[in-house]
Length: 273
Image 1 (cartoon, rainbow, N blue to C red):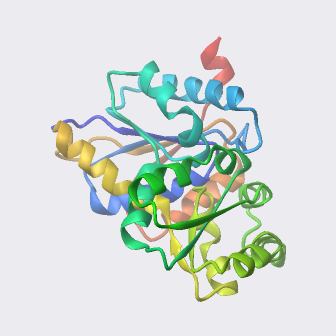
Image 2 (image 1 turned 45 degrees about the vertical axis):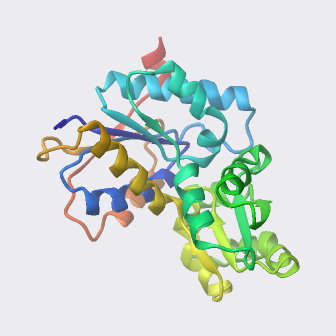
């Protein structure tokens, strides 16, 4: 039994899509979330910059006495997971890519054409193909970087024709040319536009790594005997820039729940000084 919170972090608000899956299945667990909204998006930044940002945030979460860190960011998971584990060897640190890769490998066959969309860094890292093909070498995988989507989502431009046009710009040729039948949302922001994608491409099977990550978290909590016995604190959501969009997205995602949520602005520069 361990009633300490689980730490989550993302480059912005996209990682919030992971939280409801966990909290519905493990209602006794509590969350400390950090969204680096002041420095988003990460997906077009240098790898060294992303690692440094990740170190700063993970150090902060460890200072909050979390029992686990879940990287709710495909970009960070693709290039910084090993470095973060070396930096904080005493607590489990989980990435988002491996759980989804297991699901894809176990549910797809050589007859499928699997498309993976993500940020420039995630796609360039080949993290998804490397993982998936280790589990199932028969699959046909295709990738597409969609760098414009995250800034639009962070600005709350979701239920708008601009978003639909941007999705079509990236995916129309990609899906048709490669005959994609399964699409992996390789960025935690993308579940927020899942309905847009399903509306435009209704025949696609969608794989949401935000949902798949829950299994890995649950397994690790069980194996280490650190599940919470009862809720002891409210869920705390920190942002490096507590913007109106961030607060609105939290309210939207948790509108149908009774989870207790507290918002806090947090200046990493002040913390580091």
